[in-house]
Length: 91
Length: 434
Image 1 (cartoon, each protein chain N blue to C red):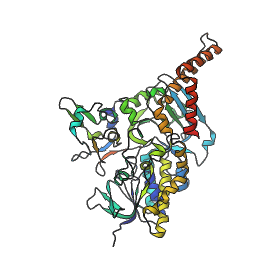
Image 2 (spheres, each protein chain N blue to C red; image 1 turned 90 degrees about the horizontal axis):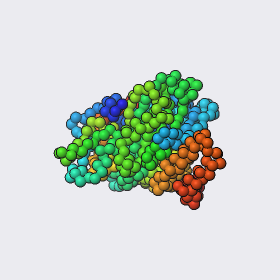
Image 3 (cartoon, each protein chain N blue to C red; image 1 turned 60 degrees about the vertical axis):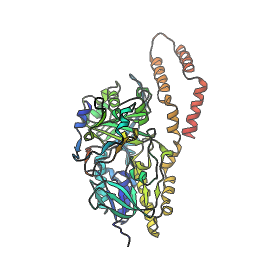
Image 4 (cartoon, rainbow over the protein chains, first blue to last red; image 1 turned 180 degrees about the vertical axis):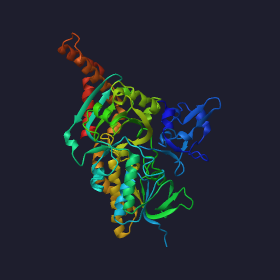
């Protein structure tokens, strides 16, 4: 089963109005060597758009573990608004 | 007059917050637990083996009523390379009697049940509410701000049971930024499988008995990590946790690593034919004893994953969370007698934590994170040597056993050096056992 299908199994309540994830300084992403956010995230939320030179953030898929914010200081991270985000059945 | 909505505000309905809430509500303390998920447990993840004692002391024979999966009667530790595993196994009928040493559990189910018990004791639990920051007046924590309209709440004491990301402790200056070398990311899948199949595959005599496997070694490509496989009632929990620093350096995606483990020839037959039901991710504190933040300040205590109260060697976490939650609650009850919730009064919490068995365990392993960081080859080169030796030893290939030993001795000397080996043994003795 690929990652997309795995994430499809999860119950999400998406906050359409506001992303809880962001980048503090987009210029830093342009010169970032590793771009570790693009591979350490277990939900592959981050993808670097090489044409547009920006970090694309698919916050809908976030499972709220916090790994990206530990791996990179340039990521701004907060919990989704109460009741939003991922809900586990098993946990 | 000073505003006060509750005696105690607990942030987070995980094991430590719920345990604190249970003890407080039982003692008649006006307690509220604030949870950001849809229901208590909905954001909670663990491996998940749950050691019984801390919970059984709180609610005797809880397992007769609570949603537990299987009690664990067999533990395995496997060192794996890409095609082999070399294991230690321990199975005992002694684990088959009440109150049972440990269970496999699902946090989302278990914590939901636990929360009901806490509510029955009289605590109020509100869901779908994020605590955004502590309210500090005159250097003292007096309440919390939430993301609800007019959502400020005031109390004598706030207990930060807000998990591994622990924003409250950070905002209050009790801890530094969490570095990627003291926290692991764990990913897990719950794979549905018939009860009978699980019983057959794992040689369990009923669907109440369970088995647990931990796996490490060179198959993790030199990263510090541990994979696991636990039997649930009608599913398997399989996962892997790796120190985030190592994921970064090895440019590894955790889901790819999990797929590699699932495909390992020793693992694949155990999960064959199963259907993935859920995919989860959660961070695990790995820093141990030295990574513990300051545990209290005026009007504030913090517990569980937020104080990195996790014994990774024995994979204890949720039971320690419960223990710390209980101790925080007891500290409040003592402080209440004098009405003094100052830092000095709440410092009793630190004494209690220090005297706990859990802290003694963490203290014993306190240098282990550093040791493994310095000597990653403990998990790669040594296990690989022994795997290769065992393979050679059991291979009947015309080479005599004495010649095999001679060859192994020479290889060992060339690879590690006997002096270095002695040094490493000394380091293990010094860092871990002494």
